Length: 75
Image (cartoon, rainbow, N blue to C red):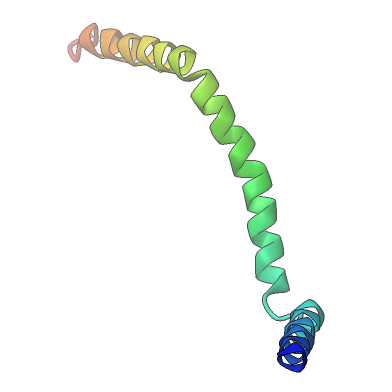
């Protein structure tokens, strides 16, 4: 029983060491971490300021609509 447990521990340690030495996919993971470091704070800001952003965009949209309504093609 004890030798069986030792073998499993040795195999597990060998697998962990192999994963630690293996560098395949490291570049992709680094890119994902960088993207996550940029996207997560931006998402947080969008969530925190969503009401102000909504009011701001709606005011600009109403200004655009008002300008288009006042357009006179015969001018």
